[in-house]
Length: 63
Image 1 (cartoon, helix red, strand yellow):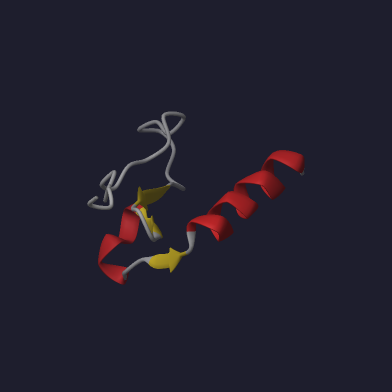
Image 2 (tube, rainbow, N blue to C red):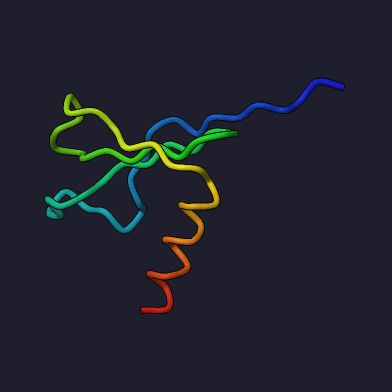
């Protein structure tokens, strides 16, 4: 059996609008979550494990 590999490509939240200047983009893959500044994509991206990303989101929802 071949392991399934997936990659969402870079995306912004559906809550982001043209008037919102402070946005990040996220890219979900099988093994990594990439996070980058929408306004400065050339600066690179931060990569974290999916479990770390999930914990961050849970903390933000509980804040």
